[in-house]
Image (cartoon, rainbow, N blue to C red; front, side):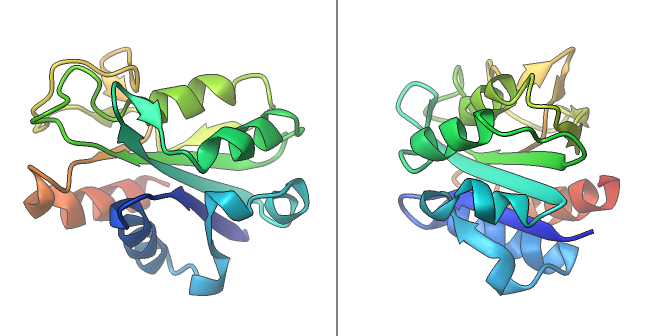
Amino acid sequence: MKTGIFFGSTTGTCENLAGRIAEAMGVDSSDVHNASELTADLAGQYDRLILGSSTWGCGDLQDDWYDSLETLKGMDLSGKQVGLFACGDAGSYGDTFCNAMGTMYDDLQGTGATFIGTGVSTDGYSFDDSTAVRDGAWVGLALDEVNEDDQTDERIKNWVASL
């Protein structure tokens, strides 16, 4: 199953996390792309899409994702697996922590995609609220490199194992 990882990163944090996830999954660096590079043809080359965004302001997507998400929303993703990850700062933005992941999850409903890596426990996270939590669990991998970076490697390892 060919995997492509797409990230939206302004400060480099989400890009770094995408690289770490790729390494844990055994995905070649040539299959890790900035979200600004996403086209229907490029996404169509992959059976599994791992999509990641940093979260900005009051829970917004990283800027590179706005057009790219529209591209994905216009595609038939039937037969493709989609896994989501996001990073945020639960200390300063605890009420919108990793909301970018919730936005991606909502926007990709109806595309035919099969979501993988969902149902991640919120245990051990320090945040107030997030649109990326459904039925008490994350819809993907939530990461906080500002306040909980000591847990990132273990969270990535566990999430990749669940895929």
